[in-house]
Image (cartoon, rainbow, N blue to C red; front, side, top):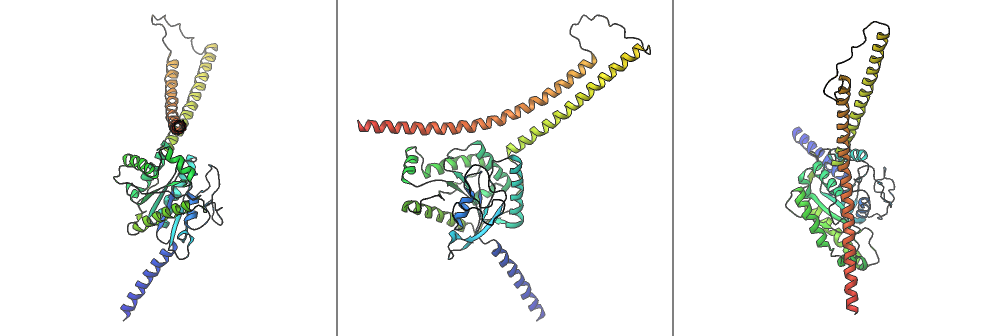
Length: 380
């Protein structure tokens, strides 16, 4: 009898712990990821039933706070739980807001460390990674690629099976829909372009689902409301399919971006250059003191003046001191040259982003010009 009671107590305790844990972070669990200003907090607020421009309320460090501008607001990883879309009759779930990527490198590294710690020690598993892009990001820039590469390095390649793409600011208003279609951009085209590049660069063999949730949609427009509800339902159904196969966070690692690594290398080279400069200054002072000592001893007659050296037939020869200084100078120039090359590589990345943006603008202008010509011809 005692054994039976003990067994029941153990089972009850285990069930209570499990129940409390589930209540802490109800399933499914969503994590929103993306660059700064892409609309992560706005999406998270809408999913829990808050206004898309929620001011953060009681949340600390900018969590779930939305404001205009390109400056990062969310400064830490934070979770919230609620009924889906704020509907009290709908199931409860968890959504995690994260800091944006693409800000100052050192702050970004702190964000990554905080995120990894929160995922491994607190959440422990995640059902859906929502990776957000602006709808104008119809090409993979180096900054976006660097962000995704860091995610894969951090989470491992298996995280893609729990990932879904979200194109923010994809308005279904008649005017903006017509502009996109005139430029040849539709939901299918956007999805195909991103999936082709992701499969090629990150070596997985399946397409990621895509949703087009416009958190700023016009609530008075029937079509915009219908499209919003359809895409939200697609996201929810994707989460339901992942309830039995969540991503376990126990093996994720702290990862640094390529830009962060290059910045650290440049910093190390600058510190090495400063150290060598101080050594050269110290050696120069030693040489000056040595020469002064020699001259003083010659004047006092303690040592004989140096004999004139025979004229050498080889012009342009160096003394030992000059040769040493030459070697040290060459070493310093090598360090400076390496620093210049690294900075040049980083500038090339920035230039490539600007070129891609300008090419997108040229293509859009060309499409509009052709559309105007066709209209003129039809009028004629």
